[in-house]
Image (cartoon, rainbow over all chains, first blue to last red; front, top):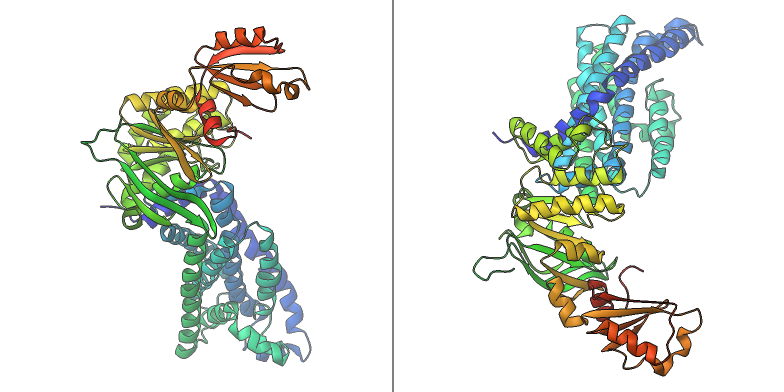
Length: 264
Length: 312
């Protein structure tokens, strides 16, 4: 009978999201359209005609067009960015601005319930964003077969691997100035250099191991191999285990940081 | 008043709150009886809010004993909180939601069924006179309206114990009186109120019994009347002298009343008969710019007990 406390926190998020809903759907649709048109189709044309010709670039990209190569990587990156957005300012707002978390904590709701409720909402946002993205991929002809659908849950997992630790980071910040650094030195470099736009093998040798430890590279490679049908069981297992591990660690860090901040 | 036959709703013994090396609440003892209206009076930083946060089971107890509704906050936090209503010092309303949505979602935090919530939201909006604003967003509401909404929200679970942390700080007089009236009605209905304030008039209006806190300790307790009787005289003569004169008055003030208190801007003479003290002052040749006789208040009690005034 009783509704779990985290679901009641999630209900609050839904009530708020009802207002922002339309706006987020429009941007969730426009974002992939613009990127896939400019980078996938536009820039992709140059990639095919580039050094060594179409054969060389196709070999580097694994025998597919640049558009088909780019789209699943961009899907994973988009999930990361959505998760980062929802795990920074809204968390600080709940702690510091309208202090809704403090209101919740005066009721039977606990710190972990708030964290889980927030993550459920982020999960919902990720589901909407990735499904719309996938629809755009189909329209662009960037989804090469039915197996590509598995890139959606992979991208959601990627987003969650970022959401939990970033919530922990946000809970430890006194003011939002740290978020600039997080995006400038974390999110954007990952977006650019984790294999979204070009294979990590193109990076200088000493940077390649760095790419392999970033969660985004695992997310990008998981989405891409699933989408292109080149995934191996061992590869999927390693990527999923890595992302689940980061998410689980993030959950622990976030609950400690939130408790320290909210239960003084 | 506390009745020895009913167990207290709140019982604190040597209750202590520390933040690192700083002691915010230093081994205080108090009981709150069911149906009582109990106040913590003291200046900012006296430890009132820290005490309230421990009672509300949001801040862990650093030392001593605390029982709330017969339970231990350490073990039964969520079960205690389910029966509390909390009005925090700063509003925690969701500014993006409407007035009635704020109440409804708060009801959901207590896992109340939607049908119950619908009925209570209507009743509570009526109680705090916000029915006409039910569908408005919270953000543009006045401070007084937000406070009323916060009070309505704290009542959504029909709490056994209502905790109010400086409920009227920052409100204009009209808004304060409306709030006091609502709180007085709750008290009449038998809701136990625990409030903190640094306003003397608020404590005198609302509290059956109160403790005076200063620098993390309780310095006195009793009903407002008892405190005034014990720690002050019946009346007070206030005199204000032209600039520079007060400093020259040394011997001439002594013995005018039971006690003389010199504040930077005026002199207070504590006496059973204020008018007699004023006459005596006139006979001694004192010519204050302004002089008035008033009844003694909690402000005087506080000044007597701590040696400093309440609002710096």
